Length: 129
Image (cartoon, rainbow, N blue to C red; front, side):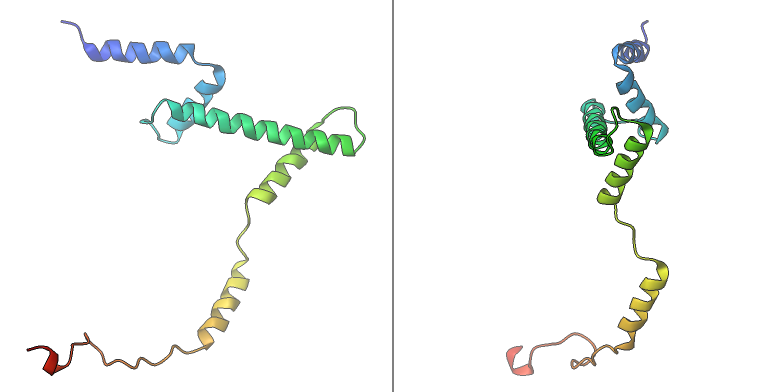
């Protein structure tokens, strides 16, 4: 009797061997993060994002290199391009001291008194018959 699961695993392994190196890296990253079940196009989407990010960083690094009058891009240009992307893409939350001061100022103002009595508001007695 033939075990169908064994053939299925072999087919997946064969497909993995045919993948480009970058796709194998994406699959390894997904697996290392505990993601075992995903649609095949997810790998292609990650690759597209990855390639676009690298192209953007290298384009920025080239601009920085040209601005500095260098003939070629160097490591410092790439680092600067990555740092500028991080600064532009991600904003840091304010320090805890600032948040605490804002909370103290906000909490100095008392809440308005409730005009309604506690409980559920019911319609007048004459409207209930």
